[in-house]
Image 1 (cartoon, rainbow, N blue to C red):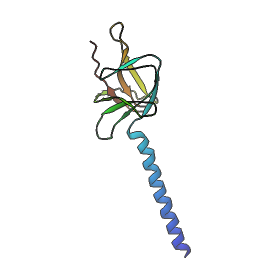
Image 2 (tube, rainbow, N blue to C red; image 1 turned 90 degrees about the vertical axis):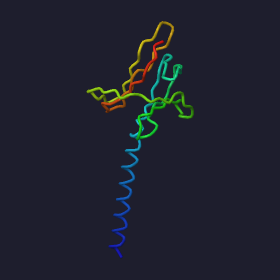
Image 3 (cartoon, rainbow, N blue to C red; image 1 turned 120 degrees about the vertical axis):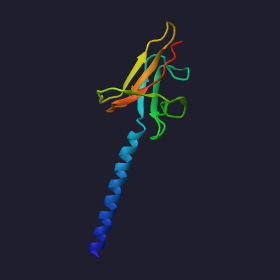
Length: 128
C-alpha cells in the first residue's frame, strides 16, 4: 500500500512541476509590457495615446501582430503588424524608441524590444 501511495505522490509532483513550467512560459510568449508615458505618443493607425499607463503585447505566438491596450487591457487602441528589428545587445529591461515628428505633432513610437530579446518590433511611422 505504501508503494502505491509513493507512486501517486511522485506522479502528482511530476504533473505539478510540468504545469508550473507551462505557466512560467505562458507569461513570456506574449511579451506583455506595461509602460507609462508622460506626454502624448502617436502609435500606428493614426492613434495618439495621451499621457498614462498602457500595455503592449503580442496577440499570439504564431505571428508578430502587436496590440496597444489600456492598463486594464479592456480597450484596444491599435493592432499593428510591425517588422522585425534586430539589436545585438539584449537589454534586461524593455526598450522603446521614438521618432520626432513635424512641429505640433506628438512623437511616434518607433521600436519596442521586450526585455532579454535581441529581436524586437519596428513600427512603420507615417511622418506626414
